Length: 323
Image 1: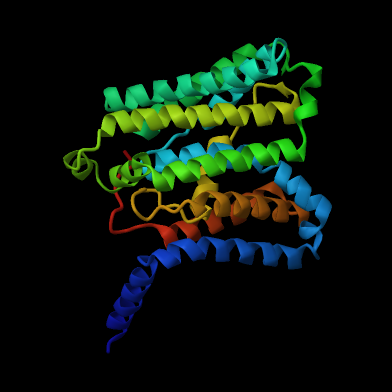
Image 2 (image 1 turned 45 degrees about the vertical axis):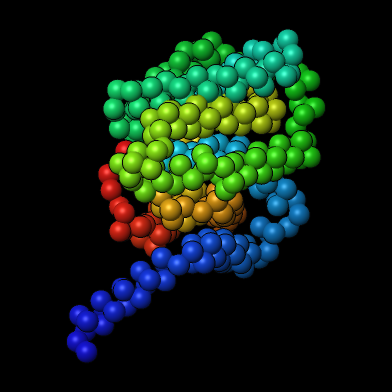
């Protein structure tokens, strides 16, 4: 057998292995465990000390919740780069309304996120503009609005909002949301429709799926989820500045890909991509910080890891331009 045939044989075997559902389910977990063990060794056990674990979890809730909404969007083969500015605007609304009633503030944040999601969905679905272009535009639009609203000073929530900043509250809210989306994703027609649209819109239409309606709905739902994440953000920091939610969209994308999420969406998507990806990203970031590496070196290492994971988990058979 020639060297070229051996390479083809290895590539074919790798493709066959990655096509197996068990590989997509297990590899993200193995990747997380490898990163955790590696940094436990490199930081001499500091990263797994109880105090640092609690600190790590406190930094995870907002990203975990917001990533859940983007997960639904990416399952359809679309993208959303407006999550950071969306979180910033929703946080401002929550801070304003917290002076009246905390439940009104939560509702206001959810409605604000849903409204921005509806704008994204309108221009993508009705005006046929690719999702990444639409959401990049709204990212700059609402980032500018967030900066304008916080020009003179940060927007503060009422003082008693910190009483909700407990691990119990944040953990219960996060687990509750993850459980709801898990049930919807796995046991409803909507979850099936998302994967079908990611695999192919034309085939989905022939299967009777109302593609445009589903896509618009998911953008609204994802916005509402991010609006809910804004409440967790507010009770943690108590105020919003012009940088509120900055780089959140990048963190979400990196986290989901680290969790094995195929960018093209479709049938290869697994719900475990959310949890494994967010935890892997946070452990990676925290571990690099604990090692005392410069910011530039941290970004370099994160970029290398990101490229490796993309190469491993990309679904080449269905790879296409993002819708």
